[in-house]
Length: 160
Image 1 (cartoon, rainbow, N blue to C red):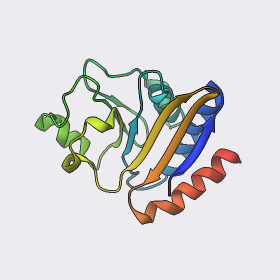
Image 2 (spheres, rainbow, N blue to C red):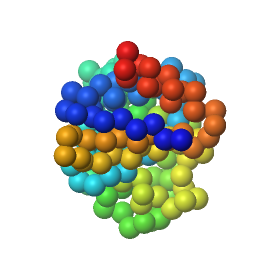
Image 3 (cartoon, rainbow, N blue to C red):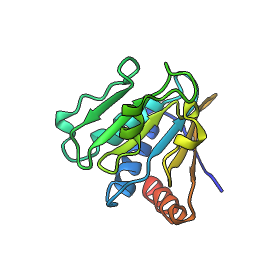
Image 4 (spheres, one colour):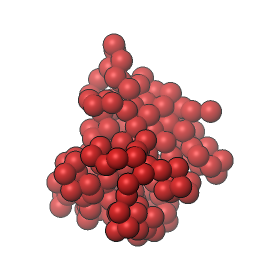
């Protein structure tokens, strides 16, 4: 069952990004985060907060990689930030696909709905962002049962 959070302001979106970093970055291999949602839904803001919460973030200038498809940030763990907005659905070239499937980076993907189902990393966590009248809504869903406990911990960290 997805976790639904009402993000009433910009600070709440930043806080969720910080909580995601806190909960998942401790793992030897954090799950890929697959973000969906329209323009202005808060995907890049959420990722910026996540990256800026990690060790090494002072060396990372977090921007949406719309034109180069992926930005790599020298954080711990290293983050590969994908923006698939400009890609036709399912049209990943081999280099991008290999990076997406890499165990060396924590992959976070904007416009993840453009991934072909076979290209979705195993064990990914889906985050659907949506603008609402009162701010934003985030729906977070673990794709494997082993991450459901992490989603509960995420809620505790976020509300903490």
